[in-house]
Length: 571
Image 1 (cartoon, rainbow, N blue to C red):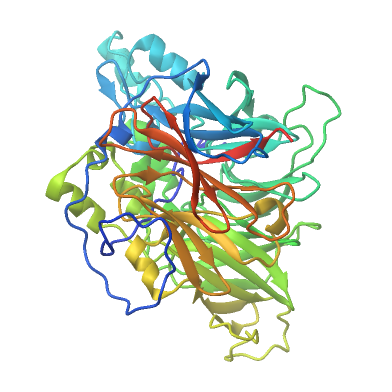
Image 2 (image 1 turned 60 degrees about the horizontal axis):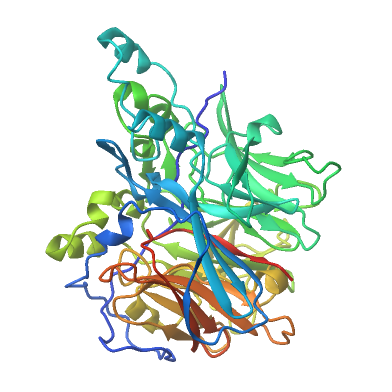
């Protein structure tokens, strides 16, 4: 039989944040990082961010914004953002941040001016919940209760019905074959119109290939070929599957036709597979990270019977090692050599590339995988000492590099560091013929702790994904959500910061300039929220090279803190 665990495990992203000291209370638009001793202190007196996790109204028709500064005239397109926007129906409310109903946002930038609009995704989950004026469909952290209009016997029997996978695609905007979709991590996506945010078509992965879901973070080859990962569930347990979607269409109405499973990887424990939010990809390899955040499938498929949410089936096992699996993108062959490291949790990759017989995999990592369960809405809405306590229990996430030797054979020596790259502190030691144990090197100086580590990493993806690169961007986390923007320089191991007290920026999106010569020629776009000010939302435009503010476009709306997005260029 097939397990229908089509994972509404919406562990949609990784705010595995840090617990460092606050550097200063004054505005610091730009700063270069300088190394210092690695000391850790707890945060005190955090500002409440409850307004950032409240239900908001949609803005279905474009409205004007007030622009301060000058937006470069070459920027022509839409910044598309996704995230939760509604946290209750009637007298019922969601428990977890990731459960909120998807709200789609569009910032249209043309000739230095910006308009804004937003719409709730017209998912089945949203429509059924709205019609019933209560939570009808279960989400990651919320179990829908039986219909109170049914009699006792009917409500009792409903506990024996499998939970229907949610189509509340609140994580990201993604592209397949040139079309735009919004995605979560179940088998359902929705095709949307990026020009008016209209919900066009519900698409089911399982109608095309034998998977029960796919991540919201696919990777792309230059020709448009798309790679993703998704689990499948059968009588013997789970499989991890690498998915390949062709770049072109033979018919305008196509969606995922031509998709195929490139290969399947057997979990170390098929009844307790690892949760993954994303994966890495280089020019020739897909890299799957099997981490110790585990899914207890028995608990998940019986959660409704037990009256528990799906999130109750997720756990962290620090006694397990993390295993990296390499898959040849051309042949689908899974390398027999496995690369191991200590227990880490990973949600977002930065980049991966091959050079001189080595594969470098850069990603944001934490040494603890329990943070997700702290992101209950009741925790995010706390204030005072209670809020400080929630924040101070969380582990920091830092950018790290792993170096994997690609040519490991029977003749490769055991018990010596195989990393011969100059100036690299990462190690990789062959333990036996099929196992290499690796230790990372940091991609930052010690002072990144002052900004709460880094998450939501982004690069100049179009030109530097799968290639050697110098810069990446992200959010600093001195709060439960991002409170600064960071530009990391891998060559100098320094960083620049945009920070203003009381402002909370979203994931930075890099947009290259049309005449770009250098890697960081372009701008950074980020949506900034201000919980202490009603309708204090603005689109921030930074010069990606200097990290200086070029402009901000103020939007007279309230907005919940969202997850991911992309730039839809019109040029």
